[in-house]
Length: 181
Image 1 (spheres, rainbow, N blue to C red):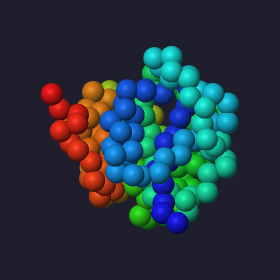
Image 2 (image 1 turned 180 degrees about the vertical axis):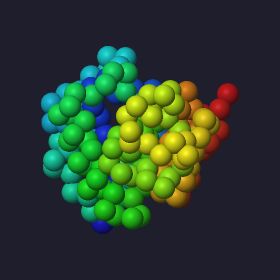
Image 3 (image 1 turned 60 degrees about the horizontal axis):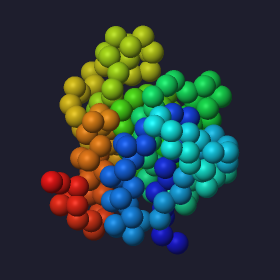
């Protein structure tokens, strides 16, 4: 069985940050499954409502080789945050798992221990990162996109390069000119 891409959804997820990544996956023939805090519909920051295929707790880690996390316009509730971190921790047990997180979503990777010893970028002020106490400040890079090992992080405004980096990391065939003027 060919492994699929897992896209994590949560309230106020940033739809546009997923647009190119989803297109690249589709062009490359990669199977896509969405997961949310439950199987109930989730509304994104721009108002798009999506119904996840699975709840986080239903995800079988062995079915996936990558997980994609869009940024979010508002903080997650404590319950949603905990469930997301538990799922990421489970997925991190596979050393070959690719993690791709955009905008503020890398904080979930940090909470799950995925960013340990990894360079990253995040749409969060350095003071806020320090206050959270979950980041290694020496690994932070003020760059639009950072790829280190099995982790890709990007600023939300860099969503095109984010999607392309995901496609390259998965060795997918896709038309990069599709996203350029």
